[in-house]
Length: 544
Image: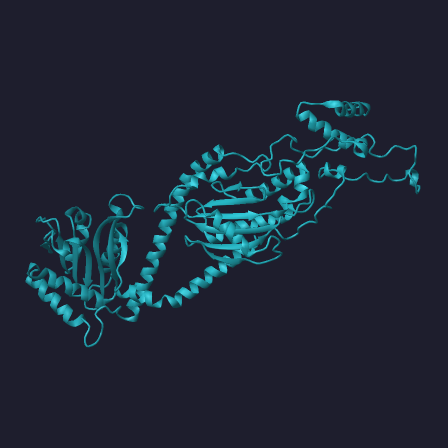
């Protein structure tokens, strides 16, 4: 499928933002690589970072000496990693573990135990520091004694932490722990740590928070990027689960909402499920507001059948590209909306492109109403949905925008970026004359003018005796039409439905048949039905 103009604009903007971020984000990346800027982190993330450092120490080349210091708040957290630290000690590394629960615990052979005072600052730390003669890694996080509402149980504990693979920064963290633990470290460990620090600490004017060598900075920056992507993927998975759960609520809300009888779409009542306050688990919702001035014209007001067909054409164009959770709504006579839970800017723009293509196709042919107009769309977490902001943004384009491209309408007070564009412009068919005849107003898309009959025996004029070739053919199947008594909440209340067929139209069997069928739907056969039935019997048909 070719890329539409709105999806193309969003893709180009996304790609440009990525390129700009590579250069403009240099300072931020360097601060993160150096460990100079602590960041919020959940316990789930710290578990994975701790495992990555432990795996790097165990899987990389063995260096002597290598020191590993790990701070645990409770013994039960250490029990899950007991085998890993036992193997480190067996490999000849100097391993120190500290506990903040105030008890003396059994640890594997070769592992040195330190008991922390529950009131000292180290009791709130989650730290894993590893330093060798040629490499280093560190994770230092402080418990904020808060919980991330998006996570469950222990995984939702929030820390403020730094991590990286710069040997200089790992040496700085080891020096901090060396002075904080003091004499609680065995003498042999203190001597080894002092020797390592003497060879690894920065000298002269080198900053203590250096990101290390270029290779170390690259590795740490790459790790931070992968962590960001994994967190984003996890957040997307969580939102998808919420979206799937929301599908049932969406279906129930649409079933309970009032339905516009002309288009068959739910009305604005279906938006009530998006009226609640926004919370931490609030899903982003894509909202697109379509304004179609052609549905407010004289043709729609003067002809119920034209209004009914046009509304159904709009409904078909809007619902065909949607997914099972998405919804199309009719808000007023000329306003329609798409609501797409969990949408991205690019996905929403692609939907608007596809709807615009279908509106352009639906504008061709009967009833000749141009379904072109404007669309304003945004992805938002705001509740209630910012429909008023989208209406205001439509003012960036006139009601007849021509082929105007996407226009950035800026941000609303909630910070949502709004884009406005023309829609449904391609292949727009001609509008009907402003004053169609009575017969034309009541003809459907299958009604055509009588065709001249070919001359009999190859003559140049019709044979007055020979019957037309289609004399015994059944009348064409009439196009479906709504009963004129249907309520039309979005149209002028003074507009009238189809009038009885009189004059020239009464002599047309097809017009008489359609009028009889309309009355039959309402249970009123009337005199015209008898005329139609008599004519049909004369042709050997069945009036039913």
